[in-house]
Amino acid sequence: MSDQNRKPAVLEVKDLRVYYETPAGDVLAVNGIDFQLYQGETLGLVGESGCGKSTAAMGILQLVVPPGRIVSGQVLLEGQNLLDLTESELRKLRWAKLSLIPQGAMNSLNPTMKVNRQIQDVIDAHRRGTSKQETQDRILQLLQMVGLPERVYHMYPHQLSGGMKQRVCIAMAIALSPQVIIADESTSALDVVVQRVVAQTMLRVKESLGVSMIMIGHDMGLMAQMVDRIAVMYAGKIVEIAFVKEIFDHPAHPYSQLLIESVPSLKEHKPLKVTEGITHDPRHPPPGCIFQLRCPLVMDQCRQQEPVAQEIRPGQWVACHAYQASEAK
Image 1 (tube, rainbow, N blue to C red):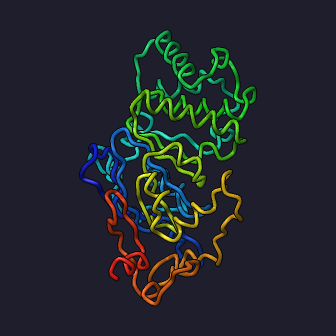
Image 2: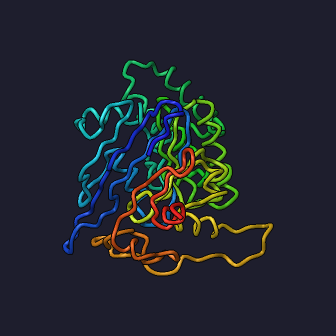
Image 3: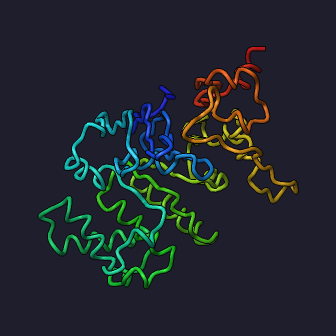
């Protein structure tokens, strides 16, 4: 899925597959996804819990641990395939060129270390020879960039609120000015008010640094305010990619339509639409379309042939027989 009339792609993911081994067979968590992230862009990766969003992020970062394994694919960062790098080479690349804002700040920060020491470790690991004063100045600058007061410099994680912890994680992610940041559901564990503060912090930092960002989540309302394009993921596959306005105005895939219809509206008082049916066994996907068991538009063709993504509008790609059939009429 590509768009030639855009800025250069800083990150390209091609046919990435990540499986988890179980006694009953491999769980196909990420089963052949393709997308590009362009310079200065924010791409939203959305879908329900268990669809493979976070596993895709771990695959991109090469942080998949057993029983998970990367089966195949390419992850090209500025043309370099990360799957070809050694662990030592990957360590030099992470934080410096590709960094992560984790989902749970509580579990990501070391409770026994002050904030300044944790950020300092990131800087020292990649920029040896930096003076103590330069490092201190950089940490204070980072705290200011994410809207935290100077006193946080000397504080432990348990002394911070959830939103403040998350902003410390943002400061760590941008410490070395990477080209790409992956935010893995960074606001999901926070209340609505704090979610907004953290989301605005990420957006402000992204714009000031000019970095590219993949924002992972399931909140379509938040995505509408934060991202440039949205990639909709279901059962290990990307079923639609489009500009955010296009996907809200003209969602093509039935699953995209159901996700958008599930967003509460203050203007329209209507019952929320719930996706009916059950998902298939992730170890044994059915032949044809993976959404067939829950799709209100399922046809015989959907049960026999897997749909191929095609561009139906400029920048909008969808893998759906129902839409393709309506276009052919």
